[in-house]
Length: 266
Image (cartoon, rainbow, N blue to C red; front, side, top):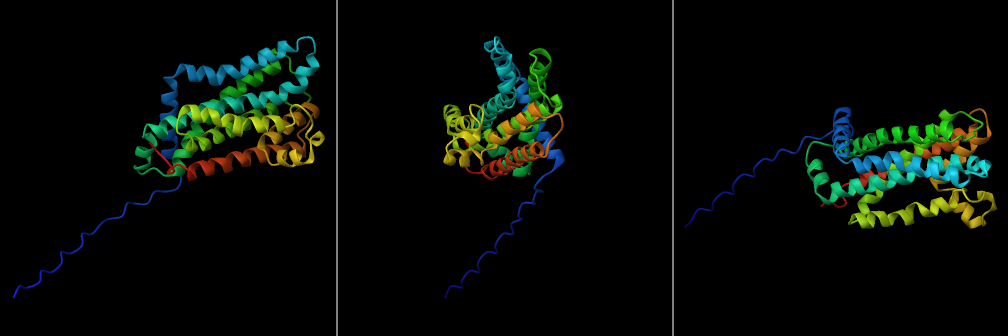
């Protein structure tokens, strides 16, 4: 009679040590890595820094015979141009990291999703500050954009718009399989907001259904905030509301972007 063999004891496994949701050191390390990579891509830097300025310059002299027209729409476009460029660059740059497997390798390290998404936001946010400062300085002090309020408030809204574009780019990169698809998201995400934000006609003149849609689009509040600076000397309650809504939308989209990090990598 054979004696049954006792089953081998199960090998003890040590669960991975939990990582904190957000760490300043890991976030800054991620941001430094992203900035270092971007520093080796001068064309991307030129796109980020120069395209909004070139667009504003062209716009000023398109309306050379009607300076008031430039004053009326220049402030709004001062926020829209940075949003669009940050959306394009961020979505493509993040998609490259997803498809190359970089994000997958990073997430295998003791690096939280919050650290990763905050690091990207910090890196592109630093670029957004420079971009917004250049565009605002050019529009106000060189192209003669006439605003009633403080140019610093224009800079604040332009910066918030750039951060919103960054957040949207991080988010949509999760749903694109190629850089071409990432660019295709622009008509779906940006163009409807551009048409409904009140740039071409006041939102209360639109069809009620479209006005209701525009009320939930963040670009509408970016344009409203710019118009508040254009018309009022002091910071108004409406301006504060608009700025908070744009900032809140950026944070919400960043959180959604963090939730999609494991959706697909490589």
